[in-house]
Image: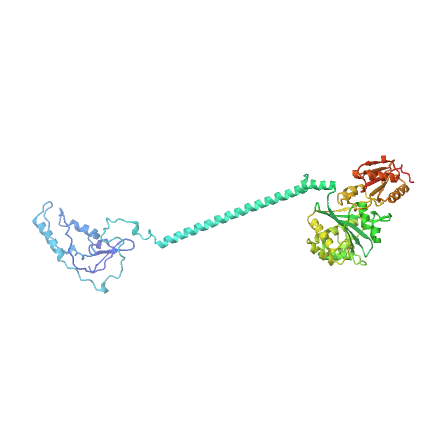
Length: 561
């Protein structure tokens, strides 16, 4: 009994008492400290075996010690040390058996509990308390989920799980919200782009800029052209070459009605008539400094020019430098001129030109080239300058003042700056054109120039003549005789009419013809016939070949008086 026994040895269970269970649920046996003596339970009833003497209840008591374990009772004494008399034969209950039972019942209470061992002699191993409630047998034990700690989670753990679920749910909601906002942005962008495309196409259709489609805006503009109801602001600019001599002229036109701009290049050979009736070329009139050049142009073109801008080449250089240089597609290379201090200009697209380079290119005219080539180069320079002019009228006026050019008294810096800013907006937006006015060798306009440039671009018509001016009468010689033309011209000027030289006709005509376009001019046409000594039957309504109120096509029947 004093030897150490294995606490998990089931065969030593009859020598030691069950004191608990280990963490794995296995029983642990050992000595229990003595407790105060308490009444012992009733002794078990033993059955007498057929062979030998023994007690069947002893083995069951040894194998199921938990049924005899009471924490408050003293440990039972080993039955193996007690001597029992032999039991009678099976099936008979004798007096001796009753005495044995009485002896056993008397023996158990008389036992005294052993003294508890000293603290130093107690087992060193600490055994955990049993997990089941006290007094419950192991055989009839009912396992319940609340008995296991790993099943029932603490409240704080449950709150952590709930917080985690909330976090996961909120993060998922945020992702879904971000996706929804992204989809909404994509849809909004598509809608904006669609509206922009539809609006752009609508504008192009209205303006008539789509191929094969005529929009209302184009029809309105065409109607305005036909009726001559368009409003235009224009000035004439004369570029004087102070180094090589000569000049070049152009009209800058702002069509307020159609919001388009244009540059009309005027050849020096264009014939103009002074106030005294003498005819000369435009280039010569500009070089002479005639004050009536602007009025002479109005008479030939049927326009109303608002002012004259003299732009000498040094001031053109300053203007190009003030706008930061220009970019031009050059059609030819211009060699450097040391005498004129002109730098070389390379040939190619989008050539960056400084002020001196721009002047060299604008005034360059190759050997044997027609004047129209040089005018086209000057038109490119003017167009590039307009694209760099500030869009603000006040800023443009400051730019004009900064170049130091002396202006025409009828054209101040504010008026010129406002016109240049509007023309610059047209040039930047692509609503700009450049045309060369074609003239015949004698300086008169060609029929094509009258139709496409004078009427469509300049809006030249009789209605645009200066108020209070004498009636404009055009004369076109179809006699083949220059003397007849001179005589007819003198007769018209003596009659108080403004003479418009229509030049020579392509072929001769047998009879003189006087035409008018507006019914209101019929009476005036009849008066012109009388002035020339022609019958009234020579007058008829028709399209005028010359931009004048009344046009006379002089035939061979005209006899100078």
